Length: 267
Image (tube, rainbow, N blue to C red):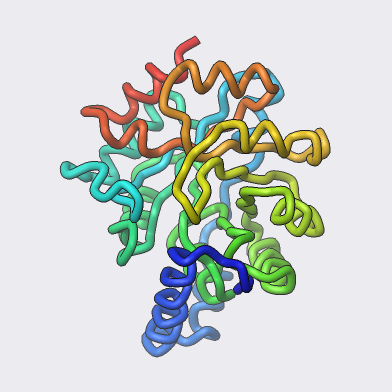
């Protein structure tokens, strides 16, 4: 963990460390590894996005999220499979499923159930700090993992990325500022997520993505995260040649999340 990690992340990481210890008592690392390598082939998360971006179409990672520490409950009537099917029917390129229980009211079973219900590539949205969690993600049916630069040292990111690549999984590294971006770019990345939310203040600014674009090579796929709440927000990002979006909150608060996706990304 980094020394300047925001307080909320410190709390989450402390809990994750305990979770990993508890999970290893149930299924050992070696047994989890056997399960991971015996599992199905992965879907190409990156290519599902790249195919759309190359055509200047919106490439949407639609998120399945019941709650968050900053906003509380986002959706009372929460059925992950129904939400996933609606997203798939209304044009999502990929899905993101929250599995953290204590802070986001997610669950591993949500990802397992969604994997069985849809054919889209899936990101395990989790605070990954240990290779064991990468194996778990593979066994659950995820095609991509999230690595949050603010949570991890350079060495930790490299080790976790290597484990994911050995399992034929994609890696989305999330950054918020120039320092984190510089660290992330040491990895052999093909895509990077820019979180517009400051995890210290929870303030959101789409300018965060724009300000970092010049530091990223054209061959790296940029995904903007947080703060995409309207078609105007989408238009703003497209004006800056950003066509890939990770969106959850704006959809979760609506009656039909898939219809909400179609409405925000119309045109």
